[in-house]
Length: 460
Ligand SMILES: Cc1cc2nc3c(=O)[nH]c(=O)nc-3n(C[C@H](O)[C@H](O)[C@H](O)COP(=O)(O)OP(=O)(O)OC[C@H]3O[C@@H](n4cnc5c(N)ncnc54)[C@H](O)[C@@H]3O)c2cc1C
Image (tube, rainbow, N blue to C red; front, side):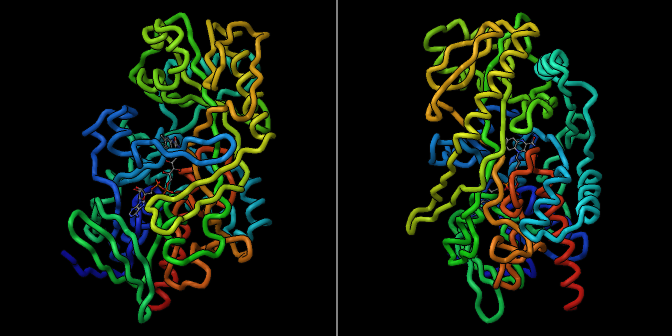
């Protein structure tokens, strides 16, 4: 069965990028139609950070890898609201020196003041503030930082009265936003001055006509979709991420807590890497500790005394999103340089020593073939291939800026050579932001939407 639809603006993907555009345009009186591939699952209908959440709201249940040396396990959300539904809610603005680099290297013409105005709006909209308490696991990381004279940074979050402010709850109640979930957009072409989108929705094929289209499918799916539809200029050739190595740290006392995510980060240890808290629920610890549990089954019960921490570093912007004809999923490639790999290993050694100095009994690095560290003078050395890297922060696959030979879209998100076609998601972030990215994605997408409104009004 086929169905014809039309809308002035169609937004493909409802993650933080697409949702901020939808909200901004709808507030300006523009009707938008949002297509989202994933289901609509309310925050109250699930257990946060559980395996059930991974099964229902992660693309391919979280089993997605970027090939390279070593492979990197990456995860993408597939649900109404995208990553905002499953993430930790930790908020940062882009460091100013990185914005300056973007302005110089990519011709990103958005000023610091313009971006700050967008950040201010997002902070207000999402009620961003520091929480009153911290998880027990986060306090352990704070102790390790204090003992080494590092700053334990308490990171603000998008929570209001202890409830996460996700996009599905905040954005899709407005009457001039129509959203269709379980709708997979596959084709895009321009005919007679209009954009035509094809999407499958349950048993129905949707044919949609639009004046403007915002592609907001995330840093992997956006380049994959555009390439499959013949749009290639600087699309998918500069993917980057924040690769992470994790370690489980065992203490004397029980760390189980209602607070599932730690909000402490340590960023002043080295210019090359930083530390933070990972999800430390029992199933996540058991998955990470598999190879240790095979040798010592008592870890299953001792894992309630454990915190999971990570070390992260910015990757090079050398990743690729490749689309193979006839294959529905993209081929993702992300190499890790020897230098970045060494920074991550140095980071794990520094973090392990700091934890062992402040009451940890043992540190279990999540690395192939590693053994637990129990003394501050023990360190790990390993080959790059032994690293078990993962990432939840992906970006830069279609960078924004007015330096056309380096970018996929101009500073207002418009795809070069394709009037009416925009990218608004993590793809447009020029290089790794070195901090949690959603704040920057939302601010950049707010700017893209505001520029669109200006032009829309001029045409009217
Ligand atoms: C576990 C986890 C924890 C995180 N914690 C934090 C944090 O604390 N702070 C932070 O700043 N960031 C965090 N992040 C990262 C953050 O969530 C992402 O950077 C952000 O969600 C990216 O937004 P986006 O709009 O680019 O894309 P996404 O959030 O990936 O949204 C893209 C949407 O497009 C949809 N889509 C894809 N293909 C199609 C198609 N063909 N048709 C229709 N729809 C499609 C997808 O289903 C998805 O819903 C975390 C991520 C994860 C996975």
